[in-house]
Image (tube, rainbow, N blue to C red; front, side):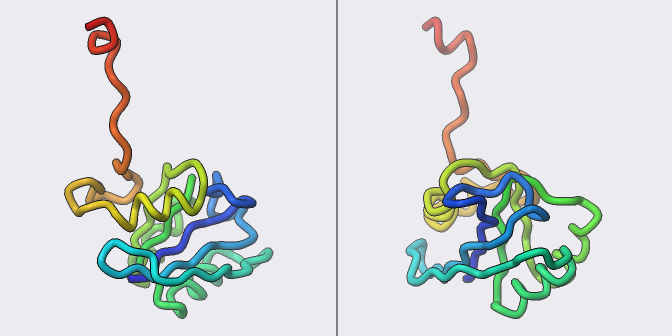
Length: 124
């Protein structure tokens, strides 16, 4: 499987459309085998998605994604998982090592970290 992470420096970019580069990784059996940086520059979302598909990317991790282009990503076979934050390599490792039960099947939700305790749980 090939996974891309939208980059803002070494962090996950808060917006896919604003990312100037992406980290693309080959993952097998939950382990990252290789990574490469992909220069995105100022190209449009359509061109960006086409470049990812050309590299065989099937999952895109990012902080935010313009919903108007979600159908296009899905048509290209790219699952978009937005709402991802933190270090790009750490997010990639969490996603690569997560089981299917840990990652929501709906785009836009990634539950690869433990939920925060409720106020009631904190008091106990």
